[in-house]
Amino acid sequence: MADYVLARKSRNIASSAVHVLLNILLGMGAVLITVFSENPALGIILVLVSKWRVFAVRSRYLWINIKSNLVDIIVGLSIVMLSYYSSTARSFDEPLDFVYIGIYMAIYIIWLLFIKPMSSEKATMAQALIAVFLGISASTIMSATLDPIVAVLLSFVIGYAACRHVLVQAQGEMAGLTTLSCGLVFAEIAWLSHSWEIVYSFGDSGIRIPQAAIIMTIFAFAYNYARQALLRHREDFRFKDIMGPIIFAILLIGIIVIFFSNPAFNIY
Image 1: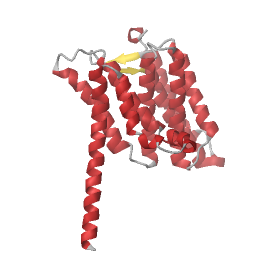
Image 2: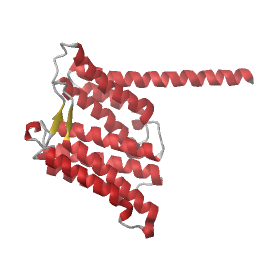
Image 3: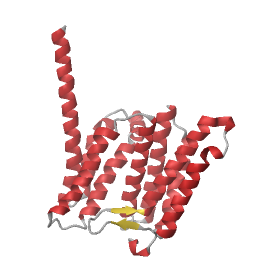
Image 4: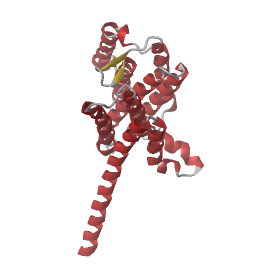
């Protein structure tokens, strides 16, 4: 019996080590293959192949599996696209150029190993916000060379996926109208902001953060806080229960729009 337990523990340790190694290789490979091939398609394929279990099911379960894994897929594909567009701004003639590749790899590896496996309420919210920030960043930068409708549709999917991720974890069921409404709000914001899209750059690093990504992340946080307050207080709900965070979010968005919308940052 003791030998069986020891063998079982050894297999568990070996399995965990392999799992960690594969995630590290995925995080490094998705970025490196994208940057050095100068083609995001290869990185996208690698991310989707890593999710083979999502697609290896009967057709009636396929859409359910895809929806359940949308947040993880959004993060992976966003990292690939952001690393691709960042690499197009660099020549890789200096050692510092490779530091920025390492940043994207580190972000994806940390997501895969530490953030993605967590399941607490706060962790679920953090996962959704990360997906919103990275997803909107990637879709906004992509929209500079693509039709605006692409950014609108992607924003809808990101808003829908983030809201669904939080609701399913918190309630164990999907509130269709709530998630669709959140997706529509994201799509509307993307449409309204498209004609005056501000992107903050950091020197010549190639790293760019769209203003819309910051605004939608703040909105997602405030929206979820208000939703939780409504559920918590129900019939005794009063506006003062959400007044602080909501007013703070409005003021923060106002400051960003008014004081940090220098047209010099515009990507168009």
